[in-house]
Image 1: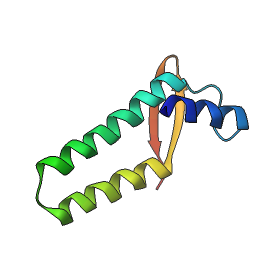
Image 2: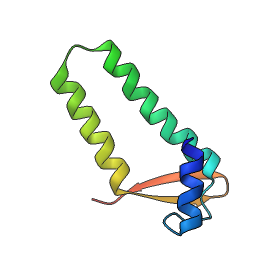
Image 3: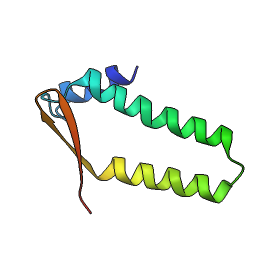
Length: 77
């Protein structure tokens, strides 16, 4: 599902076609899985909210570069 969204973004020109859609989908799946696990294992709502805000901020400000088959995140702040 995530891969399909990435591929659609590549077709529309919103995402660079040089990005490996499969590996990028693994990255996003891992990020969201981690958030779901954390949500189930903590009672600290404020801590959870801060982690979610941080994760979303990083994802929204990230530039993805592809070097060989590796995705590198460069945060622009």
